[in-house]
Length: 253
Picture (cartoon, rainbow, N blue to C red):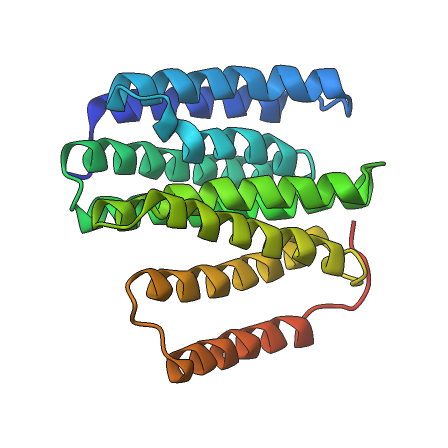
């Protein structure tokens, strides 16, 4: 089942909130940001509670509520803003549908795929949006590193939930999630020296996250081998090389 009416209604509420942000003039101030994201976070919490009976399932929708307004702040063209709003609403729908189906069928691989897709999109929006905020405004580097750490650690734990259902140890899941968060926090520090814009930085961060997450996933299932790790590292380095070769080496704001 791909369509669920309740999930669709809450996704429409999220879409409506994004439209209000998109059509109104943006004032770069903390009060604007708080009043922009607070209703979206409340919608995510209530929706998760209604759908799964738990607030703890709201992290992926909540991260979208935090990241999308930040990235929307950096998009100037009206058409691009509308396309981004529609894409974000679709990812929000996938996130809610994923947590709903996993609540009722924990072994549902399709639902896990929906949730993982939304999580990857949310992380890219988060990495790119926060880094763009760091580049364009007076935001400290330590704040960027902390946001990368907490966002990655919490998202990693959320996406590792499927492993926990298969017998994984929660303490090990938390440990690996913290390690992934630490890696991405350090990655934020490294990227601060690179002459790239926020979209390129977001893709680079996502590549490194997915590489580390993929290796961790195999480690949980005890299927990790040196050969597989080397092949994956070379593959992702090749992707990174293509990205860097096709990207202008200057800061784009």
